[in-house]
Image 1: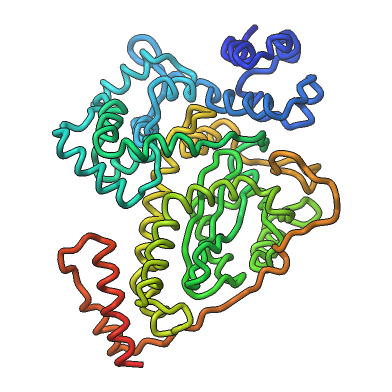
Image 2: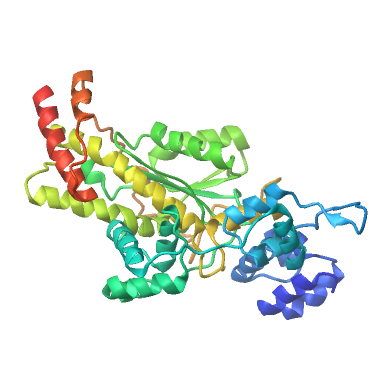
Length: 454
Protein backbone atom coordinates (compact mmCIF):
# COMPACT_ATOMS: atom_id res chain seq x y z
CA UNK A 1 0.00 0.00 0.00
CA UNK A 2 1.40 3.41 -1.04
CA UNK A 3 0.30 5.10 2.18
CA UNK A 4 1.69 3.01 5.03
CA UNK A 5 0.27 5.49 7.55
CA UNK A 6 -3.29 4.86 6.34
CA UNK A 7 -2.72 1.11 6.42
CA UNK A 8 -1.64 1.34 10.06
CA UNK A 9 -4.73 3.41 10.90
CA UNK A 10 -7.05 0.91 9.24
CA UNK A 11 -5.39 -1.95 11.11
CA UNK A 12 -5.63 -0.05 14.41
CA UNK A 13 -9.38 0.58 13.90
CA UNK A 14 -10.12 -3.01 12.91
CA UNK A 15 -10.83 -2.03 9.28
CA UNK A 16 -8.10 -4.24 7.78
CA UNK A 17 -10.52 -5.78 5.26
CA UNK A 18 -10.81 -2.34 3.58
CA UNK A 19 -7.07 -2.01 2.92
CA UNK A 20 -7.36 -3.46 -0.58
CA UNK A 21 -10.32 -1.17 -1.37
CA UNK A 22 -8.34 1.94 -0.40
CA UNK A 23 -5.31 0.68 -2.35
CA UNK A 24 -7.35 0.06 -5.52
CA UNK A 25 -8.89 3.56 -5.31
CA UNK A 26 -5.43 5.06 -4.58
CA UNK A 27 -6.77 6.86 -1.49
CA UNK A 28 -4.17 8.31 0.90
CA UNK A 29 -4.58 9.41 4.53
CA UNK A 30 -4.61 13.01 3.29
CA UNK A 31 -7.56 12.28 0.96
CA UNK A 32 -9.35 10.17 3.58
CA UNK A 33 -9.79 13.18 5.88
CA UNK A 34 -11.65 14.93 3.03
CA UNK A 35 -14.10 12.12 2.15
CA UNK A 36 -17.82 12.73 2.64
CA UNK A 37 -20.26 10.28 4.23
CA UNK A 38 -21.41 9.20 0.77
CA UNK A 39 -17.79 8.52 -0.23
CA UNK A 40 -17.28 6.30 2.82
CA UNK A 41 -20.51 4.42 2.12
CA UNK A 42 -19.45 3.82 -1.48
CA UNK A 43 -16.25 2.26 -0.09
CA UNK A 44 -18.37 0.00 2.12
CA UNK A 45 -17.82 1.73 5.51
CA UNK A 46 -21.17 2.55 7.11
CA UNK A 47 -20.35 2.61 10.84
CA UNK A 48 -20.53 6.28 11.93
CA UNK A 49 -18.23 5.71 14.91
CA UNK A 50 -15.53 4.13 12.71
CA UNK A 51 -15.86 6.90 10.12
CA UNK A 52 -15.37 9.61 12.77
CA UNK A 53 -12.36 7.78 14.26
CA UNK A 54 -10.87 7.36 10.79
CA UNK A 55 -11.35 11.04 10.01
CA UNK A 56 -9.72 12.18 13.23
CA UNK A 57 -6.75 9.80 12.86
CA UNK A 58 -6.16 10.82 9.23
CA UNK A 59 -6.69 14.49 10.05
CA UNK A 60 -3.84 14.26 12.55
CA UNK A 61 -1.63 12.62 9.90
CA UNK A 62 -1.22 15.91 8.06
CA UNK A 63 -1.09 16.75 4.39
CA UNK A 64 1.49 16.74 1.67
CA UNK A 65 5.19 16.95 2.55
CA UNK A 66 6.81 20.41 2.52
CA UNK A 67 8.70 21.25 -0.66
CA UNK A 68 12.48 20.80 -0.73
CA UNK A 69 14.72 23.78 -1.38
CA UNK A 70 18.07 23.45 -3.19
CA UNK A 71 21.19 24.03 -1.06
CA UNK A 72 24.95 23.64 -1.50
CA UNK A 73 24.50 20.06 -0.28
CA UNK A 74 21.41 17.87 -0.17
CA UNK A 75 18.03 19.63 -0.64
CA UNK A 76 16.27 20.44 2.65
CA UNK A 77 12.59 20.69 3.54
CA UNK A 78 11.21 24.23 3.67
CA UNK A 79 9.90 24.40 7.25
CA UNK A 80 9.64 27.94 8.57
CA UNK A 81 10.54 28.93 12.12
CA UNK A 82 7.05 30.41 12.57
CA UNK A 83 5.33 27.10 11.73
CA UNK A 84 7.36 25.16 14.30
CA UNK A 85 6.92 27.91 16.88
CA UNK A 86 3.13 27.85 16.42
CA UNK A 87 2.98 24.08 16.85
CA UNK A 88 5.09 24.24 20.02
CA UNK A 89 2.95 27.04 21.44
CA UNK A 90 -0.13 24.87 20.91
CA UNK A 91 1.57 22.19 23.02
CA UNK A 92 1.92 19.69 20.16
CA UNK A 93 4.21 16.73 20.74
CA UNK A 94 7.11 16.07 18.34
CA UNK A 95 5.33 12.89 17.21
CA UNK A 96 2.22 14.96 16.37
CA UNK A 97 4.23 17.60 14.48
CA UNK A 98 5.89 14.77 12.55
CA UNK A 99 2.52 13.41 11.47
CA UNK A 100 1.10 16.82 10.56
CA UNK A 101 4.10 17.82 8.42
CA UNK A 102 4.60 14.29 7.09
CA UNK A 103 8.34 14.28 7.83
CA UNK A 104 10.62 12.40 10.22
CA UNK A 105 11.20 13.28 13.87
CA UNK A 106 14.91 13.55 13.14
CA UNK A 107 14.24 16.34 10.64
CA UNK A 108 12.14 18.21 13.21
CA UNK A 109 14.85 17.89 15.87
CA UNK A 110 17.41 19.27 13.41
CA UNK A 111 15.19 22.29 12.67
CA UNK A 112 14.57 22.88 16.38
CA UNK A 113 18.31 22.93 16.95
CA UNK A 114 18.84 25.15 13.91
CA UNK A 115 16.25 27.70 15.10
CA UNK A 116 17.47 27.61 18.70
CA UNK A 117 14.35 26.02 20.20
CA UNK A 118 14.93 24.04 23.39
CA UNK A 119 13.10 20.98 24.61
CA UNK A 120 10.19 21.46 27.01
CA UNK A 121 11.58 22.16 30.48
CA UNK A 122 9.41 21.51 33.52
CA UNK A 123 9.26 24.14 36.24
CA UNK A 124 11.54 23.76 39.24
CA UNK A 125 9.21 24.17 42.20
CA UNK A 126 9.26 23.00 45.79
CA UNK A 127 6.50 20.44 46.63
CA UNK A 128 5.14 22.74 49.35
CA UNK A 129 4.92 25.67 46.90
CA UNK A 130 3.24 23.39 44.35
CA UNK A 131 0.72 22.30 46.99
CA UNK A 132 -0.09 25.96 47.67
CA UNK A 133 -0.61 26.70 43.95
CA UNK A 134 -2.72 23.56 43.43
CA UNK A 135 -4.77 24.33 46.57
CA UNK A 136 -5.57 27.80 45.24
CA UNK A 137 -6.69 26.41 41.87
CA UNK A 138 -8.70 23.60 43.47
CA UNK A 139 -10.42 26.18 45.64
CA UNK A 140 -11.28 28.27 42.57
CA UNK A 141 -12.15 25.28 40.34
CA UNK A 142 -13.15 22.62 42.88
CA UNK A 143 -14.58 20.00 40.52
CA UNK A 144 -11.92 19.77 37.81
CA UNK A 145 -9.81 16.71 37.06
CA UNK A 146 -6.05 16.29 36.84
CA UNK A 147 -5.70 17.19 33.15
CA UNK A 148 -7.67 20.42 33.52
CA UNK A 149 -5.76 21.35 36.69
CA UNK A 150 -2.49 20.90 34.82
CA UNK A 151 -3.67 23.30 32.10
CA UNK A 152 -4.77 25.82 34.74
CA UNK A 153 -1.29 25.62 36.28
CA UNK A 154 0.15 26.58 32.88
CA UNK A 155 -1.73 29.89 33.14
CA UNK A 156 0.47 30.56 36.17
CA UNK A 157 3.52 29.63 34.06
CA UNK A 158 3.95 26.40 36.02
CA UNK A 159 4.66 23.35 33.85
CA UNK A 160 4.75 20.22 36.01
CA UNK A 161 4.75 16.51 35.30
CA UNK A 162 1.58 14.49 35.75
CA UNK A 163 3.32 12.56 38.50
CA UNK A 164 4.10 15.74 40.46
CA UNK A 165 0.54 17.01 40.10
CA UNK A 166 -0.92 13.66 41.07
CA UNK A 167 1.26 13.46 44.18
CA UNK A 168 0.23 17.00 45.12
CA UNK A 169 -3.45 16.12 44.73
CA UNK A 170 -2.93 13.04 46.88
CA UNK A 171 -1.54 15.27 49.61
CA UNK A 172 -4.25 17.95 49.51
CA UNK A 173 -7.28 16.55 47.70
CA UNK A 174 -7.54 12.78 48.15
CA UNK A 175 -11.29 12.76 48.86
CA UNK A 176 -12.17 14.78 45.76
CA UNK A 177 -9.89 12.68 43.54
CA UNK A 178 -12.08 9.59 43.85
CA UNK A 179 -15.18 11.76 43.53
CA UNK A 180 -13.96 13.18 40.19
CA UNK A 181 -13.28 9.69 38.85
CA UNK A 182 -16.82 8.53 39.65
CA UNK A 183 -18.29 11.34 37.54
CA UNK A 184 -16.70 10.23 34.22
CA UNK A 185 -19.31 9.78 31.48
CA UNK A 186 -19.52 7.40 28.54
CA UNK A 187 -19.51 9.25 25.22
CA UNK A 188 -21.78 8.72 22.25
CA UNK A 189 -21.10 8.52 18.50
CA UNK A 190 -20.70 11.82 16.63
CA UNK A 191 -19.80 12.55 13.02
CA UNK A 192 -19.00 15.73 11.09
CA UNK A 193 -16.36 16.25 8.43
CA UNK A 194 -13.97 18.80 9.96
CA UNK A 195 -13.57 22.04 11.94
CA UNK A 196 -16.04 24.85 11.17
CA UNK A 197 -18.31 22.46 9.29
CA UNK A 198 -20.84 22.64 12.15
CA UNK A 199 -21.06 24.82 15.26
CA UNK A 200 -23.41 24.10 18.16
CA UNK A 201 -25.10 27.09 19.82
CA UNK A 202 -27.05 27.30 23.08
CA UNK A 203 -27.73 29.51 26.11
CA UNK A 204 -27.39 28.34 29.70
CA UNK A 205 -29.85 29.47 32.37
CA UNK A 206 -28.42 27.92 35.54
CA UNK A 207 -27.99 31.41 37.05
CA UNK A 208 -31.23 32.84 35.62
CA UNK A 209 -32.59 33.33 39.14
CA UNK A 210 -30.15 36.24 39.41
CA UNK A 211 -30.55 37.30 35.74
CA UNK A 212 -27.24 35.92 34.43
CA UNK A 213 -27.31 34.11 31.07
CA UNK A 214 -24.31 32.31 29.51
CA UNK A 215 -24.02 31.90 25.72
CA UNK A 216 -21.94 28.97 24.51
CA UNK A 217 -20.74 27.97 21.03
CA UNK A 218 -18.82 24.75 20.30
CA UNK A 219 -17.11 23.55 17.12
CA UNK A 220 -18.57 20.09 16.54
CA UNK A 221 -15.54 18.35 15.07
CA UNK A 222 -12.89 19.45 17.57
CA UNK A 223 -15.13 20.23 20.59
CA UNK A 224 -13.34 23.58 20.80
CA UNK A 225 -15.46 26.15 22.71
CA UNK A 226 -15.26 29.01 20.22
CA UNK A 227 -17.52 31.23 22.32
CA UNK A 228 -18.37 31.39 26.03
CA UNK A 229 -19.72 34.60 27.56
CA UNK A 230 -22.00 35.60 30.42
CA UNK A 231 -24.42 38.48 29.86
CA UNK A 232 -26.08 40.45 32.60
CA UNK A 233 -28.92 42.20 30.87
CA UNK A 234 -30.90 39.80 28.69
CA UNK A 235 -31.09 36.66 26.55
CA UNK A 236 -32.39 38.57 23.53
CA UNK A 237 -31.39 37.56 20.02
CA UNK A 238 -29.18 40.68 19.71
CA UNK A 239 -27.10 39.51 22.68
CA UNK A 240 -26.67 35.99 21.26
CA UNK A 241 -25.79 37.40 17.82
CA UNK A 242 -23.16 39.69 19.38
CA UNK A 243 -21.46 36.70 21.05
CA UNK A 244 -21.71 34.70 17.80
CA UNK A 245 -20.09 37.47 15.74
CA UNK A 246 -17.25 37.72 18.26
CA UNK A 247 -16.55 34.01 17.69
CA UNK A 248 -16.79 34.45 13.90
CA UNK A 249 -14.22 37.25 14.05
CA UNK A 250 -11.80 34.90 15.83
CA UNK A 251 -12.46 31.56 14.10
CA UNK A 252 -14.24 32.35 10.82
CA UNK A 253 -17.80 31.73 9.62
CA UNK A 254 -18.96 28.12 10.07
CA UNK A 255 -20.66 26.22 7.27
CA UNK A 256 -23.67 25.39 9.45
CA UNK A 257 -24.98 26.02 12.96
CA UNK A 258 -27.17 23.72 15.07
CA UNK A 259 -29.33 25.07 17.90
CA UNK A 260 -32.63 24.44 19.65
CA UNK A 261 -35.79 26.36 18.67
CA UNK A 262 -35.36 29.16 21.20
CA UNK A 263 -36.37 32.60 19.92
CA UNK A 264 -33.03 34.04 21.05
CA UNK A 265 -31.39 32.26 18.08
CA UNK A 266 -33.42 33.90 15.28
CA UNK A 267 -30.88 36.62 14.42
CA UNK A 268 -28.08 34.04 14.24
CA UNK A 269 -30.31 32.07 11.83
CA UNK A 270 -30.85 35.20 9.70
CA UNK A 271 -27.10 35.88 9.71
CA UNK A 272 -26.19 32.32 8.67
CA UNK A 273 -28.76 32.28 5.87
CA UNK A 274 -27.48 35.64 4.63
CA UNK A 275 -23.83 34.53 4.73
CA UNK A 276 -24.15 30.87 3.63
CA UNK A 277 -27.33 30.82 1.56
CA UNK A 278 -30.78 29.22 1.64
CA UNK A 279 -31.85 25.66 0.82
CA UNK A 280 -28.74 24.05 2.38
CA UNK A 281 -29.68 23.99 6.11
CA UNK A 282 -27.30 26.78 7.06
CA UNK A 283 -29.17 26.90 10.40
CA UNK A 284 -30.38 23.55 11.73
CA UNK A 285 -32.86 23.65 14.62
CA UNK A 286 -34.19 20.72 16.63
CA UNK A 287 -34.43 19.17 20.05
CA UNK A 288 -31.87 19.95 22.72
CA UNK A 289 -31.16 16.21 22.84
CA UNK A 290 -29.85 16.51 19.27
CA UNK A 291 -27.42 19.25 20.33
CA UNK A 292 -25.27 17.11 22.58
CA UNK A 293 -21.93 18.75 21.79
CA UNK A 294 -22.90 21.97 23.55
CA UNK A 295 -25.24 20.29 26.07
CA UNK A 296 -22.31 18.13 27.20
CA UNK A 297 -20.17 21.25 27.50
CA UNK A 298 -22.73 22.79 29.88
CA UNK A 299 -22.19 19.95 32.34
CA UNK A 300 -18.49 20.80 32.61
CA UNK A 301 -19.11 24.56 32.64
CA UNK A 302 -21.60 24.22 35.50
CA UNK A 303 -19.44 21.78 37.46
CA UNK A 304 -16.26 23.84 37.08
CA UNK A 305 -17.53 27.43 37.02
CA UNK A 306 -21.24 28.17 37.43
CA UNK A 307 -21.86 25.94 40.47
CA UNK A 308 -19.20 27.97 42.30
CA UNK A 309 -21.21 31.18 41.84
CA UNK A 310 -24.56 29.44 42.32
CA UNK A 311 -23.45 28.34 45.78
CA UNK A 312 -22.20 31.86 46.64
CA UNK A 313 -25.46 33.52 45.53
CA UNK A 314 -27.53 30.89 47.33
CA UNK A 315 -25.46 31.49 50.50
CA UNK A 316 -26.02 35.26 50.24
CA UNK A 317 -29.77 34.68 49.97
CA UNK A 318 -29.83 32.30 52.92
CA UNK A 319 -27.92 34.86 55.01
CA UNK A 320 -30.43 37.59 53.97
CA UNK A 321 -27.77 39.63 52.17
CA UNK A 322 -29.38 39.12 48.75
CA UNK A 323 -33.00 39.39 47.60
CA UNK A 324 -33.44 38.36 43.96
CA UNK A 325 -36.51 40.61 43.66
CA UNK A 326 -34.63 43.70 44.86
CA UNK A 327 -33.22 45.79 41.98
CA UNK A 328 -30.57 47.39 44.19
CA UNK A 329 -29.29 43.95 45.24
CA UNK A 330 -29.28 42.61 41.66
CA UNK A 331 -27.56 45.72 40.28
CA UNK A 332 -24.83 45.43 42.93
CA UNK A 333 -24.53 41.68 42.30
CA UNK A 334 -24.05 42.20 38.58
CA UNK A 335 -21.56 45.03 39.08
CA UNK A 336 -19.34 42.90 41.31
CA UNK A 337 -19.76 39.36 39.98
CA UNK A 338 -20.23 39.65 36.20
CA UNK A 339 -16.50 40.39 35.57
CA UNK A 340 -15.57 37.53 37.93
CA UNK A 341 -17.86 35.08 36.11
CA UNK A 342 -16.46 36.02 32.68
CA UNK A 343 -12.88 35.90 33.96
CA UNK A 344 -13.40 32.40 35.34
CA UNK A 345 -15.14 31.32 32.10
CA UNK A 346 -12.14 32.64 30.14
CA UNK A 347 -9.64 30.72 32.29
CA UNK A 348 -11.72 27.55 32.09
CA UNK A 349 -12.17 27.88 28.30
CA UNK A 350 -8.41 28.27 27.78
CA UNK A 351 -7.66 25.23 29.95
CA UNK A 352 -10.39 23.13 28.34
CA UNK A 353 -9.18 24.00 24.82
CA UNK A 354 -5.68 22.70 25.53
CA UNK A 355 -6.43 19.67 27.72
CA UNK A 356 -6.05 16.23 26.16
CA UNK A 357 -9.28 14.36 25.33
CA UNK A 358 -9.06 10.70 26.31
CA UNK A 359 -11.10 9.43 23.35
CA UNK A 360 -8.90 10.97 20.63
CA UNK A 361 -5.64 11.46 22.57
CA UNK A 362 -5.46 15.10 21.51
CA UNK A 363 -6.76 18.48 22.68
CA UNK A 364 -9.65 20.45 21.09
CA UNK A 365 -7.20 23.19 20.08
CA UNK A 366 -4.86 20.74 18.33
CA UNK A 367 -7.77 18.99 16.60
CA UNK A 368 -8.98 22.37 15.32
CA UNK A 369 -5.51 23.37 14.09
CA UNK A 370 -4.71 20.05 12.41
CA UNK A 371 -8.19 19.97 10.88
CA UNK A 372 -7.64 23.40 9.37
CA UNK A 373 -4.38 22.17 7.85
CA UNK A 374 -5.58 18.85 6.46
CA UNK A 375 -9.26 19.46 5.81
CA UNK A 376 -10.05 23.20 5.63
CA UNK A 377 -13.70 23.96 5.10
CA UNK A 378 -14.45 24.37 1.42
CA UNK A 379 -17.52 23.40 -0.53
CA UNK A 380 -19.39 21.27 1.99
CA UNK A 381 -22.02 18.67 1.05
CA UNK A 382 -25.56 19.97 0.49
CA UNK A 383 -27.33 16.71 1.22
CA UNK A 384 -27.35 17.01 5.02
CA UNK A 385 -30.63 16.42 6.83
CA UNK A 386 -32.15 17.82 10.01
CA UNK A 387 -30.28 15.22 12.11
CA UNK A 388 -26.82 16.30 10.88
CA UNK A 389 -24.55 16.63 13.92
CA UNK A 390 -27.01 14.90 16.27
CA UNK A 391 -25.68 12.33 18.72
CA UNK A 392 -27.07 9.13 20.16
CA UNK A 393 -30.51 7.74 19.28
CA UNK A 394 -32.33 9.91 16.77
CA UNK A 395 -36.06 10.23 17.35
CA UNK A 396 -37.83 10.62 14.03
CA UNK A 397 -41.17 11.30 15.70
CA UNK A 398 -42.38 14.75 14.73
CA UNK A 399 -44.00 15.20 18.12
CA UNK A 400 -41.69 17.12 20.45
CA UNK A 401 -42.01 17.97 24.12
CA UNK A 402 -39.32 20.61 23.88
CA UNK A 403 -39.62 23.97 25.61
CA UNK A 404 -37.00 25.58 23.37
CA UNK A 405 -39.48 27.44 21.15
CA UNK A 406 -41.45 28.70 24.17
CA UNK A 407 -38.54 29.72 26.39
CA UNK A 408 -39.21 33.29 27.53
CA UNK A 409 -37.09 36.18 26.34
CA UNK A 410 -36.34 38.58 29.17
CA UNK A 411 -34.49 41.85 29.55
CA UNK A 412 -33.12 42.73 32.98
CA UNK A 413 -33.40 46.45 33.59
CA UNK A 414 -31.29 47.25 36.63
CA UNK A 415 -30.85 50.63 38.22
CA UNK A 416 -29.06 53.12 35.95
CA UNK A 417 -25.90 54.12 37.78
CA UNK A 418 -24.94 57.78 37.74
CA UNK A 419 -21.39 58.95 37.09
CA UNK A 420 -21.05 59.88 40.77
CA UNK A 421 -22.26 56.43 41.85
CA UNK A 422 -19.83 54.69 39.47
CA UNK A 423 -16.99 56.82 40.80
CA UNK A 424 -17.80 55.71 44.35
CA UNK A 425 -18.08 52.06 43.27
CA UNK A 426 -14.60 52.21 41.75
CA UNK A 427 -13.19 52.95 45.21
CA UNK A 428 -14.15 49.45 46.42
CA UNK A 429 -10.74 47.83 46.89
CA UNK A 430 -8.87 44.77 48.09
CA UNK A 431 -8.77 44.43 51.84
CA UNK A 432 -6.64 41.27 51.97
CA UNK A 433 -9.42 38.68 51.92
CA UNK A 434 -9.61 35.56 49.77
CA UNK A 435 -11.26 36.21 46.41
CA UNK A 436 -14.74 34.98 47.40
CA UNK A 437 -14.63 36.83 50.74
CA UNK A 438 -13.44 39.98 48.97
CA UNK A 439 -16.25 39.76 46.39
CA UNK A 440 -18.86 39.33 49.14
CA UNK A 441 -17.46 42.37 50.98
CA UNK A 442 -17.47 44.35 47.72
CA UNK A 443 -21.07 43.29 47.07
CA UNK A 444 -22.24 44.48 50.50
CA UNK A 445 -20.39 47.78 50.02
CA UNK A 446 -21.88 48.17 46.52
CA UNK A 447 -25.39 47.65 47.91
CA UNK A 448 -24.79 50.48 50.37
CA UNK A 449 -23.40 52.85 47.71
CA UNK A 450 -26.17 52.12 45.16
CA UNK A 451 -28.89 52.48 47.84
CA UNK A 452 -27.54 55.89 48.80
CA UNK A 453 -27.48 57.07 45.16
CA UNK A 454 -30.74 55.47 43.99
